[in-house]
Image (tube, rainbow over all chains, first blue to last red; front, side):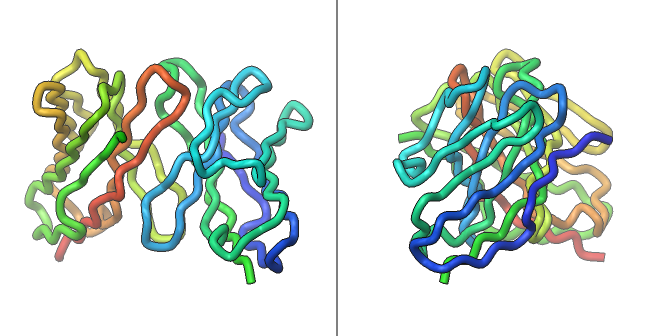
Length: 115
Length: 111
């Protein structure tokens, strides 16, 4: 069964450093998302990406964040200068778009720890 | 702002009984309401979707109802099993390109 894959599974970085989280969405999907989940809290929307551009972003997704689809398969989230409060599980998701924003398939996440 | 409330942080149900989880929302008119399952340390897994013009949807032991007047959805698991123990997330989506999640209800099925 097709799945969304994320790498690395765990990333430890020093405050102020840049990190890139990588995702390979399901191949025929059209919609791509990044979410984060701080420990014990809800899954929070960061950004959605469709037709090679950002279609929606939340207040969390400020100038420190960027997304890219550098080739036909990868989808990346970059955090330019990490802060302690960026520590969270980051989930990539993709959707077929058959029903617009529905049935998102999530990866297993990257646990980001900023020290 | 949009708000999704899921009742009870944790719900304990005896094996074999029906588990009923509630999702209420405010300040939103979703086109779709979805339910996901999340196990510890894992990503959410899609379970069911119901559209704004549908009242009920079933899939195997799962049933979802959607009342747009009450702004509420009920999620039922019949003949519950210990393997059903997880956190269940309610999620809303509309005509913008995002899905918004509630905090979830932790369900424990007791053997």
